[in-house]
Amino acid sequence: MDVHQLRVLAEVARTGSYTAAAVSLGYTQPAVSYQMRRLQEAVGAPLVVRTGRGLQFTEVGHVLVRHADAIFSVMRAADQEVASAVAHGGGLVRLVAFQSSCVTLVPRVIEELSTAHRHVRVTVEQAEPVEARRLIRTGEADLGLLCNWENEELPDGEETMLRLELMTDRRFVVMREDHPLAARPTVDLAELADNNWVMESFRDRFLAACTNLGFAPRVVATVDDALAIQVLVSSGLGVTLMSELALHAHVMPGLVCRPLDNWPLRRTYLLLWPDMLRVAAVSTAVRVIRAKAQELAATGPAICPSRTRRAP
Image (cartoon, rainbow, N blue to C red; front, side):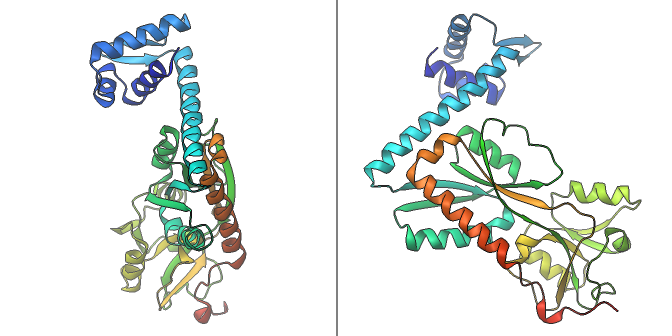
């Protein structure tokens, strides 16, 4: 086996065909077929089998793809470690992060790095956890800020990567302060069955919870920008659900936020290949992210403090 054959294998696994892998790598299709044939000869077992017009990886093939991902991770870490050593500990860290972290945790991290660790440069790309996980696995990002719910199993694709827990946050109902439930300390989802909703695109868990409670929510607006959501709620269009982390950034005047009862906590964590911690710039970024996450978790969001009323 050599690294070129493993790179072809990984690209065939990613694209699903020899032809697509050839286009992606800039090879000819016969060249990809030749490299795959040589790799299977070296392994001594079939890696892929044809199923009609498609390909299916064998168990041996899946095992080798996982190892190929790890090998490329080590190579990327070595490349960045050398570059960082040349730059006296500096270097570029490519960070991918989910939406609410981009308006709360990430700005604090960038500010700290820009003042105390100017040798570390950071780029940021916003992506939902599924896409962020793919970017980390393929090496298109060095470090990921991801989230999932506390009662979920370990997501597929993270088995061989390093996961560092950072903080948890709650789900809140956001509504106008003249809403009938605004004076309540907490709100149950069932009590909002007759309301209109302003929601994000990714709302499968919300819809499932409503179905379990026996109602279909009236979603009157689908918006993926946190400020736009608050503006629409403030206008009286409906109520919404937002994460505690997002509410650290801003709450519009006239709105109140109440914890949602019987909803799991959301976990925010860092995801990276273990070898990337050997890269000085990445290691520095990880330390700063963990410290800022602890600060954020300790302070808690200032959620409508001047408009909080006691429940009757």
